[in-house]
Every structure is written in C-alpha cells, then in structure tokens.
Length: 51
Image (cartoon, rainbow, N blue to C red; front, side, top):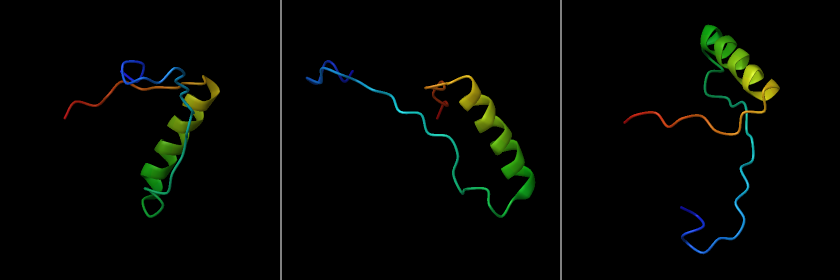
C-alpha cells in the first residue's frame, strides 16, 4: 500500500511494551510475557484484529 502511494522504502520498527495495564497486575504480567515472547522472536507484525 505504501509503495502505491509513492514511498520507496518501508521499514517496520518493532515496539514492545506500554503502560496500558499498569493498574491491572494480572493483565500486566500476561502482556509483559507476550511482549517478551514477541521480542525474542523479533516479530515485526501481528495479524490485524477484526473490528
């Protein structure tokens, strides 16, 4: 899609972690574990969630 708009290079930068669950300890632990899992595997993209 970005190439169709005229961009020549597309770089996906990984980003793992956030503060969304800082007041929900159980969710924070699950999210931290998932982020660590994704970072170890160098995942750059997850499938889009259906709306």
